[in-house]
Length: 241
Image 1 (cartoon, rainbow, N blue to C red):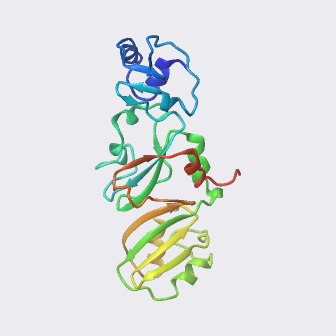
Image 2: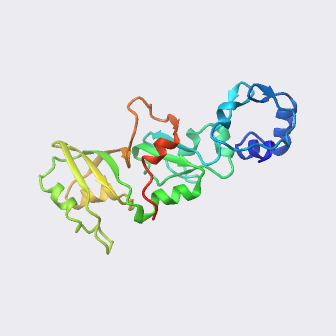
Image 3: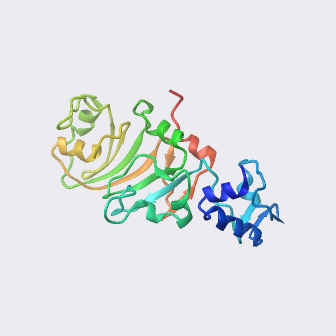
């Protein structure tokens, strides 16, 4: 890919602005100055480690995946009113082409592990209904559990209001009378909250801490991002379907 196109797609500016960066001596490869904005580059995984723009390493290459610890009060949308999850991204990431999108959504009042990518094929592979990628949520409830919820959720017969298809079996791990971990393999609208409503309870707080085999790092602060390695991405990928 041409250097000016690559940097433009990564959000460094218009084609004209990128040419100014290059000709101004701000781009280096393997420590050597690049002065040709039309130079062609092989987009290899090591390019980010080899190239600098200004004093910083090159931004993540196309096809990247990042993990965000989403705080409560932030909406997974580009357009809705209020604070949006994309406002937590570095400014250049918001100008990338293809655009960065969330892999599925967490509602405004749910916190925790959210994946972001500019790879549409990868996004759809993870969220496809047939993929059945497990997602684990830590739930705090308004009332003590009755004791039969795990059996109800595991049966695969629970029918939510205004739906005609029962939920897939889900796994409930009770950690206290009002706290539990729930693992589901679907992503229906407000599914976890509606499941507990169906058994006569109300979710007070909801936090996603695992997708596939990938857990949210304990030391990743709310609102912080982590660019994932290919090995980490593999922890959430379902088999080819």
